[in-house]
Image (cartoon, rainbow, N blue to C red; front, top):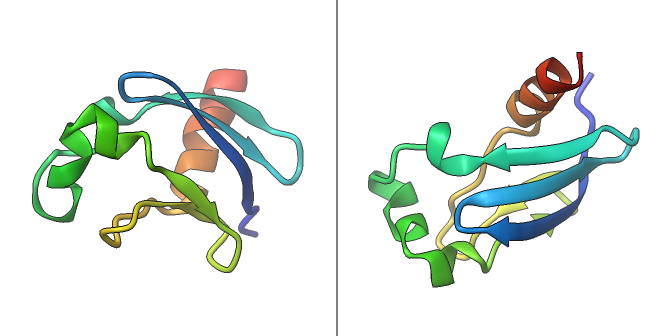
Length: 83
């Protein structure tokens, strides 16, 4: 079962606060899980990185250049932190 992301906020640099529709929430350091190459290269620029938003159709976070992250992967990372 995939749970949708409903909120995202940039806290600092590459750290995001993410909240899922079931209430699970927490901080993720994207620089630890995303190589800044290919479609993710533009995310290395903190100003561009801060343009992240929730795409309600996909239920995940996206950037205008098409970069996105699988919500189930982010959910599993936050679940491990909460345990």
